Length: 483
Image (cartoon, rainbow, N blue to C red; front, top):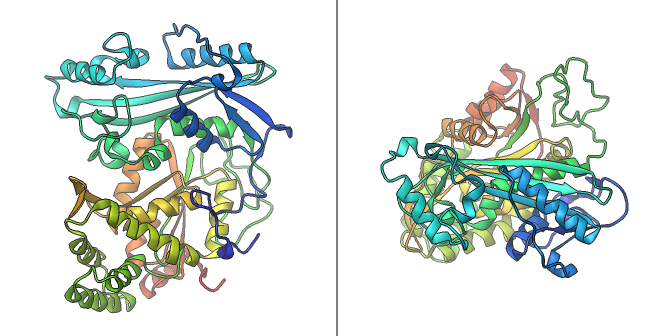
């Protein structure tokens, strides 16, 4: 594998070298017509599927303007109607999706009528107003809902495939946020702690774990066949006791025979694990350089850093508080730009090649990759894109009227909170009992709660307390910064 530490990819291009990764079914280039006239949806589908040699085009580009009548009573049925119609009209492979909102208190409504809930023509504000009126006497605990997306694919030979994604949350009492579309201003997703509506969440965050992203990811797993890799891929058999692996990659324990048929998840820490430095420390240095952080806060941060390095300080909230105080009343867009640039300029070049190779091996094995870090959202969001991670859990700062308040949204994910927030995300995404944390990678004793819940904890260049515990419990100890 190439020395990925030297790779400098273009923005939004995953850092992982995929030259020996996924191979589409069949070898010839393919044109797929996406049955939508919405250019934003087309761009999103292109970005998520991103299969080498495949071109995704709209019906408009092929001169098709007609639309079929969507009269099925299920999302899958309507998706198939649209995909079959596009295939018949063009003779090419076709893809279509149908999605909507399902509200438990309304018996599943608006369902397949989501886009025309308030009548024709489609009117998002009217739909939202009607939904609120229908739920006016429903308490918060009973306002549970979920988005569903069904994706249908019809190949040139008329072979059909279906995939579905679900996104759980609840309905707010009033709209919040100006982003997104449809019911986004009212939907509070569980995966983000129920603190923000989809209209308050950046598109790049939403697209990582939205119902459409999940459905497309499931479809892609059907359209793309993974190449042979050096670790055991998840078994599709109910009984995995006879599954074996003939080779092994250092840093990734074999999992063959350990799990039943569940979604396999791998959790990576960031600071000190995937990089050999601390992102808060680097951020403090940059804030000092740019005269943004008060000198008193810098001195306190330096003292904390020295104690942390000696293993005498576990409270990682302290340096964040110093940083938050610097960003109080600071334009969120400006603060985000500072943190994003810090990642691109200083942290990305410090990503450790053995860690990147480990990420790639898990990706090839079909596991879900999640970054769980107490570092800041603008930094971790960029990291997740580079790694091709399906989700991330991190520290999110509160924004009011476009400025940081100096407070966080919920608790930062550190110590026990890492485990609690990870479990909340996994249950909301896959359902309780439908997933297993196969591997967890961390460097600090505060990572123990999450690591201990994994089938295979790996201590990466650990501090003294974590190393002692890892050796006592026979956990794997890896040295990525040396390798």
